[in-house]
Amino acid sequence: MKQSPTTTTLLKVGQLSRQAGKSNRALRFYEEMGLISPTSRTPGGFRLYHPNALLRIQWIDRLQQLGFSLHEIREFLEGFHNEESAPAAMEHIRDIYSTKLGEVRANIAKLQTLETDLAACLEYLQVCSSCAETTPRSTCHSGCDAHSSNEEMPAMVAAMSTPAH
Figure 1 (tube, rainbow, N blue to C red):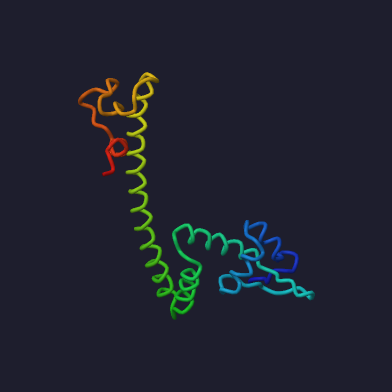
Figure 2: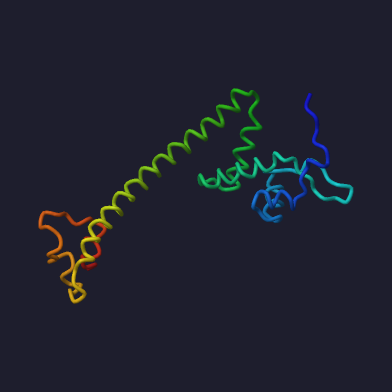
């Protein structure tokens, strides 16, 4: 049988905010939105949270990193809690996580392309560091002797030396 946490295991809002790296105000806002809720209150009215509230806050952070707004997170939770059966609730989560996984993979592919482009630019530009200080910028890349004639200039470098008009 599950035991309810004693007052010594519950966290005051200040303790929770320190552990979560959030302000008390942020936690109050999460509470107003229904994202977290205190387990109980002290006789003096201080909110007390179960240690699992920290896990919920970390989950909220992860979803925000995925691009969810707090309102979307609330809708996500409401959708989950409104499902009648466990399989339907799990399907709800699977659908959302599956969509986000596709978006994350697409972003990773874009970032890998940018990484490749930047590495090529830096490799190309490394040769340029051997040019004499007196080399005019106007001859840079167009008539540079440091690069072989068959070496293709990366687009992110070529765009800099192309007139904008």
